[in-house]
Image (cartoon, rainbow, N blue to C red; front, side, top):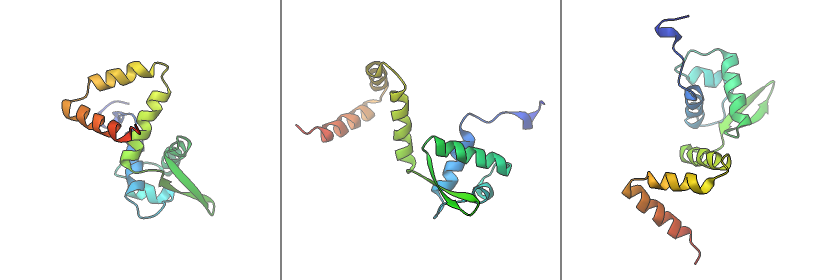
Length: 124
């Protein structure tokens, strides 16, 4: 199938939209409630699949309610970003090179901020 409606979404965009729905909710949501909050027109089974994968990745917690589950985010946006950074580091054998390359690409302001945060953590 070709045409404007057949373009694939960027990787992770549906997961991001589902996460946003969970984070903006005042309480845990059922898959049907998540589906209602999405701008994308997704099948219920697709929403369930996304939520199940997010649970397996540790991004969403779930609790049983009747025959279904209710889902909530395990962290806020900044906590999830920090978790993703940790996952990248944990998956690589040469952490020093990765961290060095990361620091080399920081702006001066971000480097000063990182130094300040690291100094704050230094017990000595």
